[in-house]
Amino acid sequence: MSAPRNVPRSVPRSVRAPLDVAIIDSGGANLASLSYALERLGARTHVSREPAAIAAAPRVLLPGVGAAADAMRRLRATGLDELIPRLRVPLLGICLGMQLLFEHSAEGDTSCLGVLPGRVERLAPAPGMPVPHMGWNTLEPVAADPLLKDLPVNAYAYFVHSYAARVGETTVAAVQYGQPLAAVVRRANFWGVQFHPERSAATGARLLQNFLALAADGSAAST
Figure 1 (cartoon, rainbow, N blue to C red):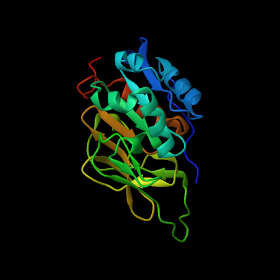
Figure 2: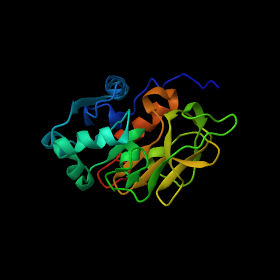
Figure 3: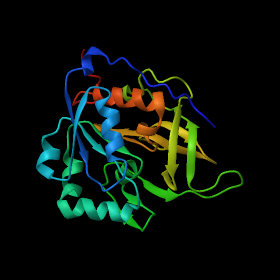
Figure 4: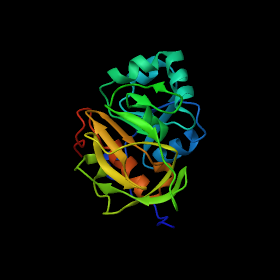
């Protein structure tokens, strides 16, 4: 299934000024593409695994590609497993990064960051629904949230994952893949998306633009 490839060309005045975003170096291959996607929207990014640099940033991205146990091992090695839950600035977990925000992952029986309640479980394959869930799928809003501002109904996003969290109290958008799954989650200043915004064309660009507009209290920053 294809989805629109157009990406917004104009950037609102509120995000044209340089905006710092720290991208946690989680060892994934998508760090460069995430940096590029944010820089197209006027952000200034830096990739780091240094706790001091992460703590000083006004916005933080936690990407992730690979296994939960390996990712948590890297975070623990630098003390980021203790720092991340204490952050008070907007943080966005992406794909595996979203899963790490939960209490536990069945992948490797891994204790995670515990920012969000609940567990991440392996997807069950079904006819016509292989694992991993890979490709375009539609987002179903569950609750209003500034991260979803101006996204159309049934916006397409690009997914690649074998594990997922079920819809729960922190879900603000779901995706259907045999059952409703959490696609976008939020608790306080912590957000997570199960899909890859840097690969999700206009939907991803709009979501990242909304993330750049977030204030420290989780509301949309004033223009």
